[in-house]
Image 1 (tube, rainbow, N blue to C red):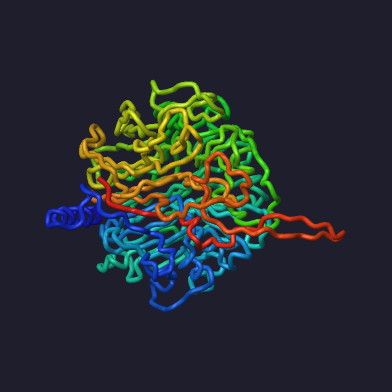
Image 2: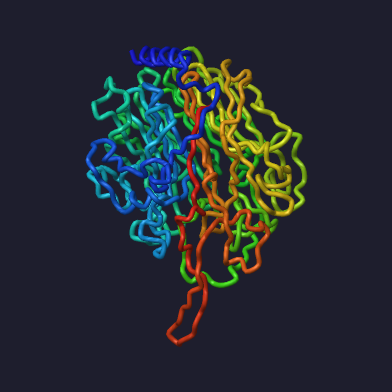
Length: 637
């Protein structure tokens, strides 16, 4: 019965497209999911409480009010289409809109939290909100959240077939303001207020009804001890005996770099979860899990290994469960790859005058790796690197999916962004990406794995280009069509295989990334339909984090689909206002091309002995657009 509902939805969608409705073959206008500028500026109604959206009862607070006008930062977007109605989409991101909720002079002390964005017209227009449970939330929904933290991010979303949506997240900061990084992971639940399988599908995923902590970190300071990160979620929509189960996976960090993949399941629609189960008994240094469910209800988790810790290679692995996620078999290697992990040598430089008023202590992400002289991202001052380049962090990661409507094949579809063989060469600076001292061209690779017999196709590049890097890929498959997306720098005017994305030979930065997408109707054998998705080319290297010193683009993009309908979301800088950093007494290597508008004054501090120290204030105009990083979306091939 459930499968008939989905097949009927696909048939209606095909008729709708034929009649001139929303189609995926030609992307439309980019739409903004994060409406965090004043409503008079023409970017939506601002941020509306989840409680108000569901009940119509007015509610707001300092955080929501700040989000409405913040022109703040958002990254790591996720998006999911309702399998009962392709007009209904839910999105999320790491949303920094509330960090100045006590005013600019107080600094960035408010929450980074999980966004909740909602569209009822196939992604053309969005309402922006936050998942309940954030600091300041005193709505009736706040009491339904088990979250104990001041920050939350790494959002992932999944729908079941019954109008329920699930938002997974990692969460860290201590609400008391200590250095503790709790390192929890939780899942928030939304449903149709009219009940499961209600006929009014436009109310699907509307009513929040609680968040459940799946695993607690050790609450140690500064990411020491146990910290859960790199989340993944999926729900069973197969109509099998596992239908409605919710599956959640993450990477468990312990501060030494020997990370492990863990998994938990819920058989009561996300209300409770099983005890976390380690999936990688004999492997270590693992990240980027992703979950796939095949049409027979089997569950697969993919992840990557690193050569940097232990005897493992840079590889894609997969584990399988045939009992609805209760137990898993041993990890199986699918393929090795040449990594594309941007890195450099740390070379910190002091701010010419001290920073007397610390601003924005909540950097892009503090990171969860063991201490090292290597840098995964580079910028100014303490984030300066030996090469002088300015770049955002990125590592090869694997994303995977299965077609839950396909009952005849147990196939897993994977994409990953690795270095193309034949392009590896020696680096001419301290920057490297393809192993120590090596660089190469990053591309989006595709592999199809047959879970029934353990075989896989040879990796292929979906869209082989002579120029540009392809990073942050994602893939979706439901209803017989595959959709893949990635960031692509083929139009980067300064492209060189020896330099980071968007970096020129003279160390300036430039607009360099677009989202591209591709479609396959033969389950990945060929990818004939490819096109550019974005209407605007972004500079991803603006220094908007760690007190305006380093770029941060998040760790992923996202695509969701049902049949030929597909929609993607990405981090975007079209609204960022470029400027100068007054702390650079002599302008540094990027020649202002990575700097954003900011306002600082020189302060004087006097100690008990009457000695004076002069130094910089924090940024006193955070609403001026310098940190206006947003989430946009559009239809894809």
